[in-house]
Image (cartoon, rainbow, N blue to C red):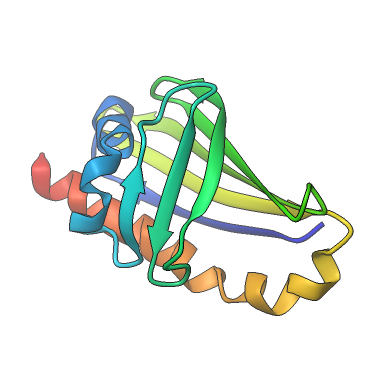
Amino acid sequence: MPEYKASILIEATAAEVWSVLLDTATYPEWSTDCTQVEGRLMDGQGLRIHSRSNPSGATVKVVELHPCHKMVWAAEALLGLFTGVRTVILTAKERRLTKVVVKETFSGLLLALGVTRIERMREPFTQFCQCLKQRVESAG
């Protein structure tokens, strides 16, 4: 199963980083890829995320939410023949330093057909982390 991961250290508390991550309405203000998020990050809820790399949007379901620590959402396509699971983990390193890890794991029978498209996700992952760092640190 392919997995893509990016990580970054942010000079802020995990609570400060978490606050920015929960405010999905502002993602387009600071994320270079996200253009709109419909819905709110709540356990068991659905979100529709529009981006420059996917203008029509993708529907995801929040499957795990642990405040100031971890969020997981999953998206299925083509009746479950292709699945992507995104995990964001926050780890407090020091008093005002938080490590953020964003990873996505892909699985399903149609995985081989989508490998080229999946490969294009490496850059947006890195950019998301860099933009999140800039947003959080400029607010603090």
